[in-house]
Amino acid sequence: MMSPSGFRHGRIVAQLTHALVQHVKEGRLGIVTGAETGFRLGRDPDTVRAPDVALVRTERVPPVEPSGFFEGAPDLAVEVLSPGDRVGEVSAKIQDWLAAGCRLVWVVDPAARCVTQYRSRSEIALLTAAETLAGGDVVPGFSLPVSEIF
Image (cartoon, rainbow, N blue to C red; front, side, top):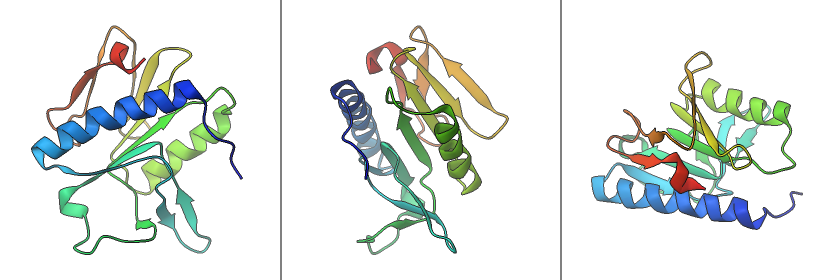
């Protein structure tokens, strides 16, 4: 059982979701999902993760929309940190996303007002409020000043 997110967390998730939905819809790039959408990353044992925001690119969207968990990782997973998050747990989530084939992970840190972008376990970039978050080849054409997230 997880406790509800705080107000700031919810506002940041909504801000990012809105920006991504607008861009993805305009470019017909795929489907953006909201918080608590489950992605089955593995079986035996089942591993299901639910990012705060996710994108599945058009070419990976099944012809029949699943009513249950999406099988596999999204192309983009966004995690917004909460005050009670533990470094080890967040690190485990990032590793799970990348190991399952997620191409881009954004970890948003409201306290530090920064975003850490993971393309792989070795390709990591820290973006400050003075920089711009970009979608690269995963979300082509998407850009958002990090300062606008907060």
